[in-house]
Amino acid sequence: MKIYEEILKNADLGIEAIEAVKCRVQDERFLNELAKEKRAYVSYRCEMERELSDSQLKDAVASKFQKAMMKFGTKMNTVFDSSNTNIAEMMIEGTNMGINDIQKEINRMNADKEDVPPVAYEYIEMMQQNVDELRNYL
Image (cartoon, rainbow, N blue to C red; front, side, top):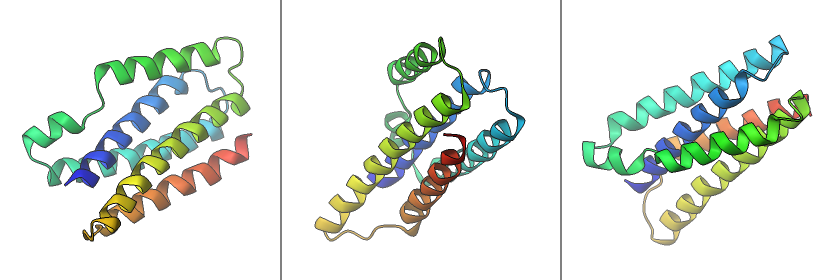
């Protein structure tokens, strides 16, 4: 199911993004928030891996190019400013892009009269909660 592939790809990128910024974060509270978010992404990634076949998994995982570009962008954006504000803003932007990607797939499924699994709505809710928490660091 395409929505599972989108959630898996999104969770994979979320994990990579957190890994890319955590070495720049000095604030213990912020690090704990990122660790909590990472655990949620790992949990969803594992759940989606159980739902998808091997061939679907291969297509769903974020490409090495996508991951490399995200890491490069993160490094460039934190070279001169590794403040909580800058990192939180980057994480919020990435999370919002993920929310949009999942919502587009939900909208497509609704238009095609397909059943949307509850996990899709739960995933968006989790990401929105992440955004709300990250705003505390702006």
